[in-house]
Image (cartoon, rainbow, N blue to C red; front, side, top):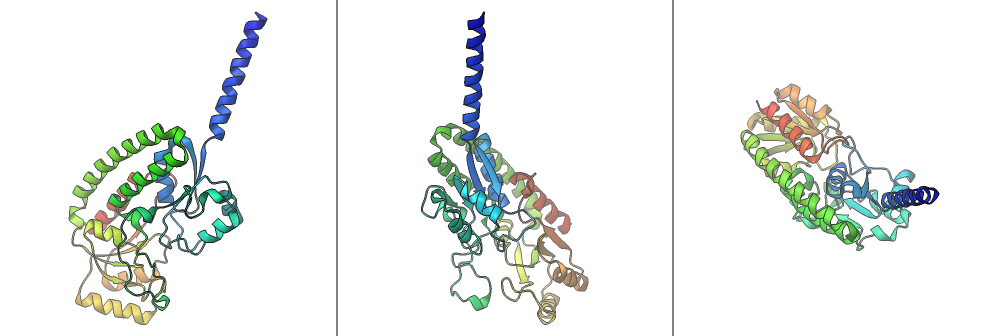
Length: 301
């Protein structure tokens, strides 16, 4: 009886050890933006702990390299960010301070989403006097579901490379994601027919992939140069332009200053649509895209 109890105790201890080792073996993944955190969680499932450095209410261009972020990067097995200079103001400092060799540029744990898709609006001339211009092209690719799918394929390969023991898990999760994502795209295409050809004014030129996907026509930007707030003289110029060529709505990200958009709305009667530029921590990518489309459709009707 004693030996049976002893064997049972040993088996329980072994199982606890295995469970602890499994939990310890989870990947630590540092995502720069919520969209890539959401995608990574979908593809990795229980095999990873995923941390997002930013929220939907923050401008990813301008983040402080806080000690808490450095600590997270130091422990990361994989870095998943946008790239194309979106995080140039803070990510290089995090990487340098972290001393984490696994996630430096050129290593298997360094993943930039924009490396795996084609970019729009590559500048013909690089001149910082023109504002915050990205040399490689516009980095906000997560606003195009087709490019998101391309990133998912590449990210699943990267997860398998750094964690081959969970290859089957990543492959199955990617298959499930692709199935749900393609069905969602089909639905979004039907829903968005009413938006094609709609003319928009944007607070900042960060909607280019959404415009390209939905067939929206951008008439004006409420910044004289990227990242430069408009003055009254410039806004009056935009107003005069719209009097000659009317728009249908004004778009801005929910983290952006909405005063210029509201001023223009008062002068023109155009609806102002404040969109979350990224999913919240509680939302999946599909839920976020659903919300973006629904807001645009409500403004159009």
